[in-house]
Length: 237
Image (cartoon, rainbow, N blue to C red; front, side, top):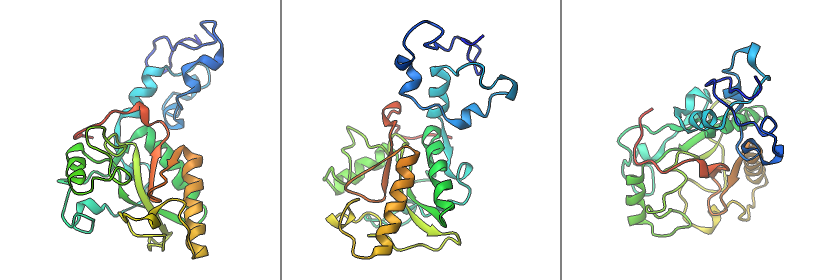
């Protein structure tokens, strides 16, 4: 029964089973989360592949960050007035991301924790109606994506974050959040060796887990599978 998905019981479209080159199989371009495989009964694991439909349904769900990274420090700036707008922008705490993105974030956070760091989350999912107000204020697509295109935050697959020590004390990094200048660049010159070391460590752990560095903002990381997700104006999770 190698052609049957152990999650839904339907055909999994396995390339080997249908006689095509395994390199052409969908699973070569879409990562199957380890957390999804762990939901399969132990006696069925490793015997057949999960189908593409089940993988996509699983990855596209929204869940709270704390359900995946329990020690994450939430400093959601747009829930406060401590942001570039100077006003509360979110009507409720959007402390969530797509499960596919959270699976990667957990991997990065685990690696950072082993080095003595905790992640501090500044922003995660962002409704498109908030993106529209940001664009009204900052019409610079280096820092704010045009709302008619939508940002990776609107898709629930990007995160803005910095680092704290294991006690939750915020550590110095190149700039504060939402610094709209060249010094906020991911590869900008940094004079302080400790700060540069922290940033390169953060970047290494995030990219190893499957995120992309955004060159204009050192704190902004995008899931490399962004194309799997659509823009959402508001969500329930």
